Amino acid sequence: MAAFTLLPSRLLACPSRSLPRLLHHHHANLILRCKMSSSSSSSSLAQSITLTSQPNEPVLVSAAPGISSSDFRDAIDSSLFKNWLRNLESESGILADGTMTLKQLLIQGVDMFGKRIGFLKFKADIFDNETGQKVPGIVFARGPAVAVLILLESDGESYAVLTEQVRVPTGKIVLELPAGMLDDDKGDFVGTAVREVEEEIGIKLKKEDMVDLTAFLDPSTGHKIFPSPGGCDEEMSVFLYRGQVEQETIRHLQGKETGLREHGEFIKVRLIPYRELWRKTADAKVLVSIGLYEMAQREGLLPRH
Image (cartoon, rainbow, N blue to C red):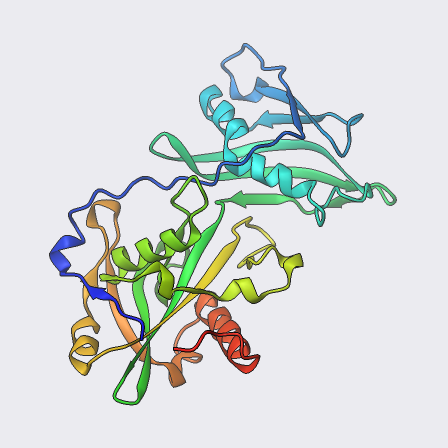
């Protein structure tokens, strides 16, 4: 039987959360040839890069007005940007079969998390070689993330543990799975999932009790899901945790206020009976996790618990 440790609320506000750190990758196939303008004006900032998939078609990378030279350089050097370029040339990448060409890139926005880039927005001009038509290419890059479906059984009822958070982009308070951006340079998805649960819910899980639901997907998917591939590069791993608890634990968690206040996290824990979960929230992570969990159960892929 899986077990977890319930943490006192006072501990949650104390630790200083490390700034989100995005995956670092080696890009041996990417050749950067710099032609950086010496002008401080963002409108004249430009750099040429050459990709292995189109060695005779250099790509012009430029900065939109308002982008500083330092932000521009940081954007070009960021793992977010390099990972996106690497995906373009991967086996299932847009440029892999030579039917499309990347002409130019415009860096439009850079949001820093301390000394690191957290969010990056840019426009990519990619053209179909046969028709000459441009493919829609506005990118909001934020990198890999994790989410956790926590199911706690008590007195014959299974409860899903959710968080209720202010989500400014939606203009709403959203009921959702505990989730967060990858917070480890080595790509520690399981460790990140455990850490997010501890910070957002206030319970400490064991890594060995976590089941990666996305690992059951076909290898062609990269064992990740894309929540919003039409505009965002975010790729997510979804984990499952199952445990048995007393009713006192259920009562203690319901409505509990958690989160790291110094990072603007104002979170309330909500427990929903699993049988009602699919209709209680519009969070896509919840609905995807239900689908993965139910299909994995049906196929007999889940470990005994």
